[in-house]
Length: 296
Image (cartoon, rainbow, N blue to C red; front, side):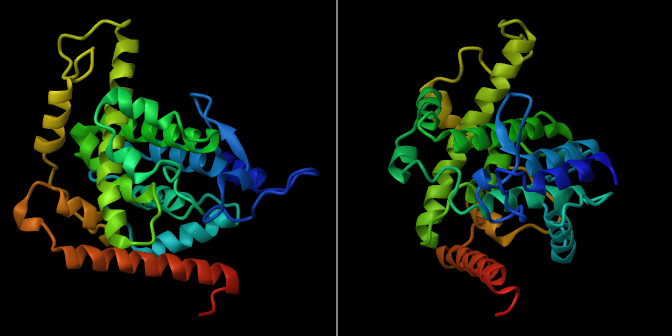
């Protein structure tokens, strides 16, 4: 058994005072064993283990990482192994990425559900974005910070993986909130996408400033003072997404294709609604299976 499996098993064992959930999906972060990441964010150990395996297997450089999905049978097998306290060897990196998104999607409440759609909609600048997420509770704030750092790591390998800030924010956004109405969820996800993109760009800017001692690099594409409001709005409208190969989640693509900038790929509102309804149905089946042991 490798060190990752040992750590995961340890994270699933109940202590004398605290009993943690035996499942790693579909449960609250508070019910799971947590560890600190490099920035002292307290997050479930399972996320750190999947992140470490994703990085060690070169997942950050994989084209379309977090957008291309693996076969369902493989994801279900790995999910079952993780719930048993085993981190399988040689997991497909797209499977790992898909399970990280699934972990967020299946939370009892979304990481950003503490922010109302109106609050997110009215958030138009970097400063407003930073101030807004400060309103999150500590658990959700830590999860968001961890996820944004992960997305920033992906963007730093954009030359290889073809995932820029807009692309990675787009595929993560539907997994960060939960709404019962599909059309409302879609519209909110678009605003969440813009919020995530802003936080990613800020993180990348902070990393660059830290690396250059606070000085602006002459080769940098990001201003040390951050984008102006006009630049911010322009970037949100004009930045186009890349073309990626491979099968993708219908749920993610409902948002991705509708705002990809390619009119030929824009789906009708009815098709988008159908995708969201299918995703909601799948989520309901997951809950039913967990309650009744797989029976329908």
